[in-house]
Length: 314
Image 1 (cartoon, rainbow, N blue to C red):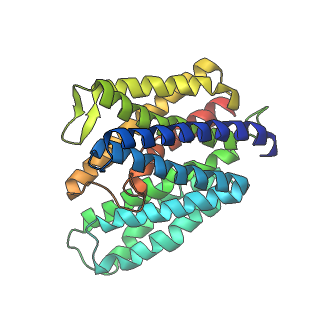
Image 2: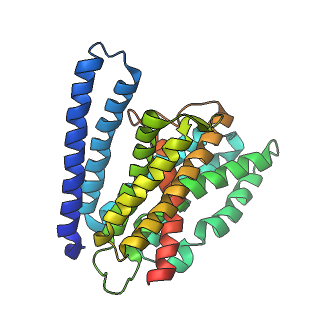
């Protein structure tokens, strides 16, 4: 990762500058238009910016610690996200051992396999072995009430919160010719592009949004916001080609792919929230809800990004 330190510093310097500008602008807008704190849009914007400071700080700290820091960070995020997911499921006392195995056996083993770069096993460990053994553990308790629903929810939680999320630090294991020691920049590229798409969709939606994209799933999303956000994030991704092994066109196309996956990931998880009758997955991150609310676009885009890069550039 040492070879990437200069470029990584430039990237974080750019992100830091954007956050400083956004914070100053938000403070001015609140002073000018919401001195009493009653403007919901401005207050939400300010909360989001403050949360981004915390998120960027955590990523920066993890990157400083290298491979260990990145894996530990996403392992902890997976744990927190899985906890949020489980709280909205139909689990019963009979599922306690299966849940304990999910949190304290499956999750750490998945990230340990990523640490050892054992692609042949971490790519199938959860969708094959965990998916087979978790139902076995649960069925031994002999409680068949909503058994299929309970098992499917636990499996889906592991898929989203652990398996998909673990593909972010797994990017460090890719052996790309001429790109050795710089893989951490792939993580920066993925996170910046996907998360910026969410921001751009929010901004374009507020400025130009007229037609609802999926009103029953996410009332705030608009067609105009989605198109503007995807295109803006793709242009941003193209401008960041210099930190990747991609050409500008390849970076733009990959950015479009992962932002599309991120947008659909947000819709899928919004559908789950609506089914459960909640607005947010949690309240640990001010302005963003829970960990899953912040990771929804990343977890859907990470495996796709990982495998496209693995099979096209290694």
